[in-house]
Length: 125
Image (cartoon, rainbow, N blue to C red; front, side, top):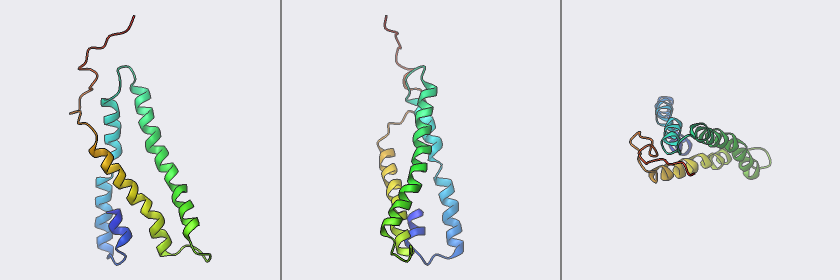
């Protein structure tokens, strides 16, 4: 959807609205990251596990904005950025979404179960 909005410049307003609605619907993967982080954590580590997931989710978003701006500054013509410069700089978003999709395909399904609760937990003495 982001790729369509970036690479098809002649979209009508109604088409953009539909794409933005679909983007809002399909971009809810953060919730799944928290659930998966909870399911794969070791016992007694829920806080640190969810804190780690939160750090990467929020930190990644915060780091991407200056990174896109840095790319835009490097490739923009001397009179200021044009449409082509924005297209190249924002292609980083499309690339990151592709990498995230490939990474998600490598995850093991937990079937909404804490995978460590099925294993016997023993405390070393």
